[in-house]
Image 1 (cartoon, one colour):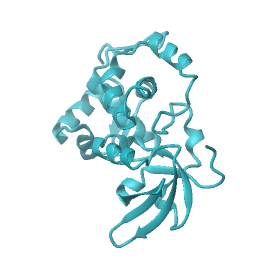
Image 2 (cartoon, helix red, strand yellow):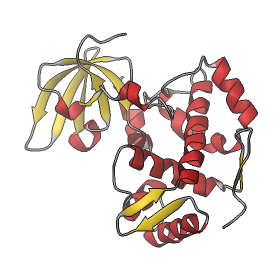
Image 3 (cartoon, rainbow, N blue to C red):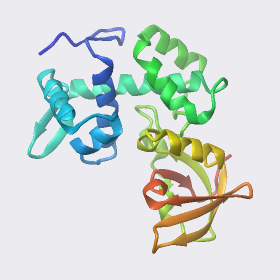
Image 4 (cartoon, one colour):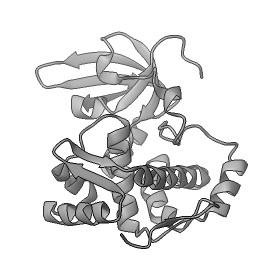
Length: 232
C-alpha cells in the first residue's frame, strides 16, 4: 500500500493525476454496469495496453481496485476517491462555462481538476447553487437517479421530437465529436426531431433549430434524451 489517505475535510493525498484519470473512467464504466476493459481504457487515455496493465496493477496494490476473473472493480476506497475526482471535474466545467465554448469545457476542466482543494470544492458547490448535473448533462455523484429516465437517442423512432438532456462522459473524451455537436447545437436543453434512421449504415439524422446533424449509432447511443413532456 502507498500513502494514499482520505482526510476528514474531504482531501485526498497521494493520488497522482494519472491515477485520478483512471479512477474517473473506471467510475463511469462501473456506474453504468459496463465491463472495465483494458484495451478500451488504453484507447480513451491515449496510452498502450501494457501501460494500462501496469497502472491497474499499481491501483490494486494501492487498494483502489480489485482484479479477478469476475472483472475489474473499484474498492470502497476507490469509489470514494473517484467520486471526489468526478465532482471536482464537473464543478470546474461549470466554473468555466461563461468563458469557454461548451465543447472545450471537458478538456480544460481535466487540466485543472487535480489542483482543487476541498475548500475550493465546497465554495464552488455553494456558488454554483449545488448543481446536480454537469454542463453536458451527466450526474454529479449521488444524483444518478435524476437522469435515469432519459433514454439513448438510438431508442427514438423517426418523426419523434425529443429534448436533448445528456452527452455521456465517454463521448466527452472525443474532442472533435464535442466540437461537431456544438456546431450543430446537439447539446443539453435543445429540442431535436429524428428525421431519418438508416439501419444499413447505422446512422440517425436529427434536426435541431432547422439544422441537420447525422450521427452514427456508436455516437447516438451516448446522447440521452427526454421524450415525454420535456421541461425546458
